Image 1 (cartoon, rainbow, N blue to C red):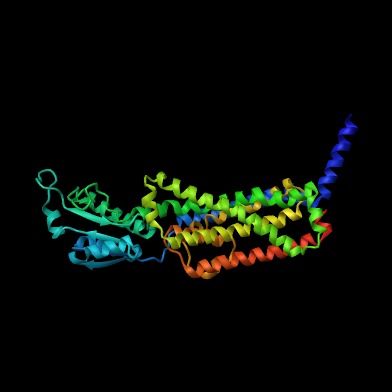
Image 2 (image 1 turned 180 degrees about the vertical axis):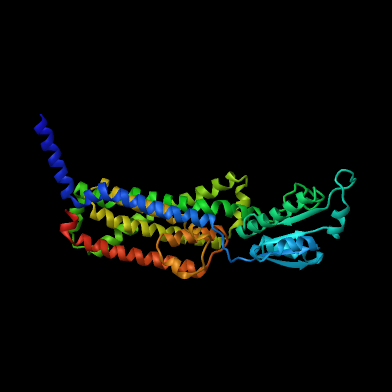
Length: 399
């Protein structure tokens, strides 16, 4: 009995070691994937926590008193104080809302003199209130508000509460001095998650069809019958990729519709207001990104499926692609925003994620969109040629 067990173990070990693909998938790939994922995630966490140390915060101030000017003037704070008048307040608020500048501080007239004689214990009027207007959807604005508020809070305690900061007022009855719109908040929240979810949905649709269409035919023996026909191998490859892409794209469009109807509810918005955020051009851009991304996944999975011996093996080969898609879905988070440099959009899948983030954040670039679609099509054509070569090799197809 013991000899039988050892014989079977020896036979299985030889089979696994002699099958290079199986050995790689079972023994080597898990460690490689964990290493890559941990490395990328550590870089992601670093990107989330690091701020641009060279950024100079533009802080507009009305009635800036000498005391506050001294507190906010140290060079290490990277604060540029821009004194404005009451007539400029609405203009600066609009600039903050449009993410063009960082902060607005409105001090009461004669602030230093007022707080010098103000006694909270005997006062019959409200303490002088400092208004700090920011945009919660802009990281630089949030950071500027945090720095200024921290400094003024320390000053506030030193003066034993002789003034207040962002107390309820006529301009902000709830005490929230935030100029971010519903669209800004939606873009901020969804910009981190939607690209990754969207790419995973597209990949799932492609994975459900591509392995079955090619590796499945190998298992059933129907692929051999197709290959003996006089049709060109390139025509077969292109026909399979385009047909799979068509149905996978329909699934992607369904995902777009589903997200469009469900995401607003997560933030307490109605679908009508959500549709007001984005234009027809944004929806066209979204469809182009979805179509080209689907083409990339289908073409890559088709090549892997042609190389695999079975559907199960093809799905195993697809696992790294899923992990790559998940990481690429966080592209804008890793980079700290949507970059404008064109070379970022020459990387398939990664470029799709960046464009999705750009669409969500109202930052679509026609040039970068065109580069993305063109790059993805070129990648798909390369995979089509590779698939045609595989179809021409009986050694690979019927291995």
